Image (cartoon, rainbow, N blue to C red):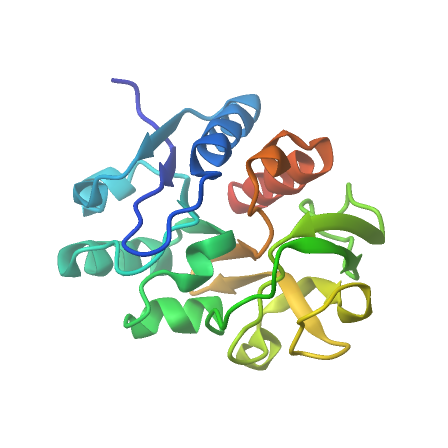
Length: 219
C-alpha cells in the first residue's frame, strides 16, 4: 500500500453525522489534487509513532466522543508537538471530551447548536489560504455551533465568525467564532465548525475552504 500522507479519521463514539462518507470522499479528492495520497480509516490502531510519522496531515472528520486509545493520544500529541498538522472538521469540536491536550489545542469545547438553518458567515481574515477564496459575507445553511468559551482567549487566530443577526440560537453575540487556526509547538492546527450536511462537500466554495486549509497545513 502506498504511503498515505493525509490520514482521514472518521471514528465516532457519539452522534454520527450522515455526511461523513461525503466528507471523506471530498477530502481524499482534495488531498490528491494537492499531490498527496490519502487514507480514510476508523481504526484507532493507526495512531502510532510509525504511522503518524508518514502523515503530512491528520484530519478528524466529525469525530465525536473518545475515539483514541491512551496510547493513541500519546502518539498523536507527540506528532503534533513535533511538527505534525491537524485539520478538525465540524463535530470534531466534540471529540476527546476528557483529553486536556485536545481541549487546549482546540481552545474551547462544543456547547450545542440550534436547528439547522440559513445564516451568514463573516469572513474577517482573508489573508489565509482557507478563507482567501471566500466572499466577505458567505451565505450558508448549516448547524451553527456554539462553544463553551471564546477560543480567541486561548490565542488562536480567528478567520471567520457567524453573523448571529442572520439566524436564531447563537450564544456569542457579535463575536461568534466559526473558523480558526493556530501553531502549536512546531505543529499546525486548523478548525472549521462548518460541514454538517452531505451536500456541503460538493459545494465549490466549501471545497476551496477545505483545500486551502490542507494547503496551509502542509506548507
